[in-house]
Length: 160
Ligand SMILES: Cc1cc2nc3c(=O)[nH]c(=O)nc-3n(C[C@H](O)[C@H](O)[C@H](O)COP(=O)(O)O)c2cc1C
Image 1: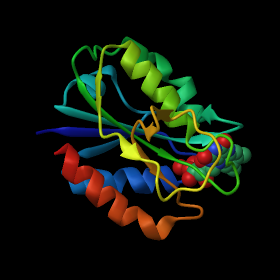
Image 2: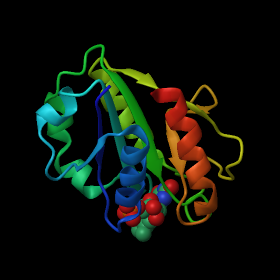
Image 3: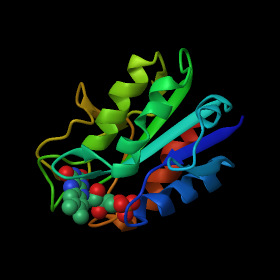
Image 4: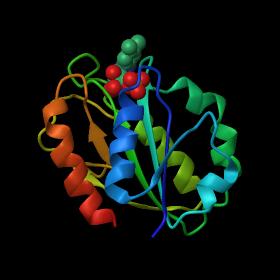
């Protein structure tokens, strides 16, 4: 199995998490700024990750490069998502960007794997929820970083 982990990151938290996920999956972490359409397509499992900024917006490099995702051929492709956020500081829009990525890949025909339970988090609203579950792995490096390693390990074990 070949894994590409494509991420955007302002402050470095998501970049660091992407590297950890790449290590666990024996995959490659690629910044969306330098990613090509082929990076989205030439892997058996595509993992996309973004922090949320503003009041529930996609990270700026993802916004600037969203056409790469929009142009990629993802029909039938296995895709997993992760999002970084801050549930104490932004409880009304916790990891919303993961929900935005979800809409994009579903629109492109991808098969999204790796939904997770919302138990263990404390927030009021998230665009990354579907039917009471997160559409991917929600990570909070601001207030729950001690839980991250276990969350990654459990999630990855279901993906690969
Ligand atoms: C101005 C600002 C707005 C933010 N807005 C949100 C938000 O709406 N929802 C959320 O879950 N996290 C929000 N965050 C938290 C970041 O997503 C979180 O710190 C993330 O780990 C940053 O990732 P990065 O270091 O890779 O950029 C915000 C942070 C800042 C500084």
